[in-house]
Amino acid sequence: MEDNWENLYEEDGVTLGPEEALLRETEKTKALKVEKLQLKDTIEKLQSKNDTLVNVNNSLEQKLTSLTEESSRSIHLETDQTHTLKWAYLLLIFNLTALIILILFHLK
Image 1: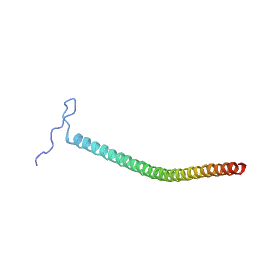
Image 2: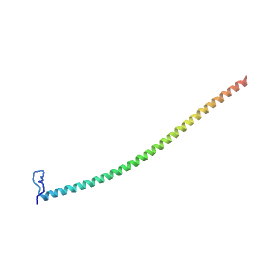
Image 3: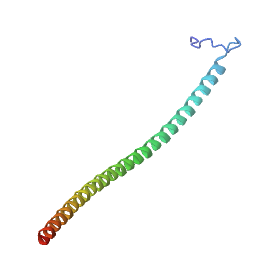
Image 4: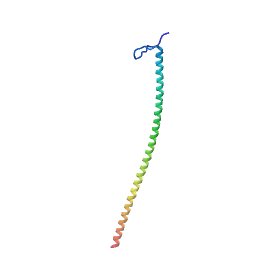
């Protein structure tokens, strides 16, 4: 049988045997699995935060829409009241003018 193991070296230049190389690869695999689980957990947390932010955003959009509608209704009411007041003043001035004219004609 051929020996398919590559010569793996540590940082200090020492050659690793097959058992040490296998142990090292096993440790790397375990570390990668742990990192994968941590990343999954992070993804789940971020998705949860994202869902929460989407809900908050929708809620704020609904509030903005309702406030905008209330504001436009309020503006229409103010406009209607302003027109009503203008008409009331106009009628008051007209009536006072008519009254003054009638008084002047009555005094002559």
